[in-house]
Image (cartoon, rainbow, N blue to C red; front, side, top):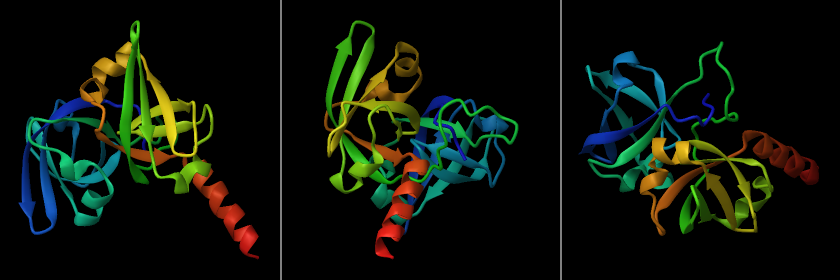
Length: 198
C-alpha cells in the first residue's frame, strides 16, 4: 500500500526490452535503502525491485502494465515519481493508494496562478462515478484533490513544493498520466452494482 506522497523524483537511467517486457534501471538516492522483492510505486505503478546497486535499482514491467499505464512511453533521461510502500507504523499522509492504475488520462490545460498551478485532465467517462468534487485521486503517483469535475474532466491544483519535487514541473499539454481512483469509491461502486443485479 502507498499514500501518494512522492519520496523522490528520479531519472530513468536505461530501458531494456526483453520480449514484451521492459526492464527499467532507475537512478535515485532511494536505491541504497531498497532490497530485492520490495514494492516501489513508479508514477503510481507498483513494481517489484529485482536488482539493486549503490545508486540504481531495476524493475520489470510486463506488457499488460505497459499497455495500461504511461510507463511504455518513457525514455532514458525522463523523470519519474517514486514512493516506497507504507511501513506498518507509518502515517497515512495522503490517501490509500494501491499502485494499481485504473486508466491513463491526458493533460488538456496548464495554468500558472501566481505561484501555484492548475492542471486539467480528461479521462474515460465510464469511470465518472468514481470522481467526486473535492475527492481524492492519484495522478502519476501523487495524492491530490480534484475539483471542477465533469463527466470526463477534472482539475487539480499543485503547490510550489509539489511542483518542484515531482515530475509535474515537466508535464505538458497532451502528455499522458496514470490515474488511480479512490479505492473506497471503487468498492462502493461494486457493491451498488451487485445490489442492482440482485
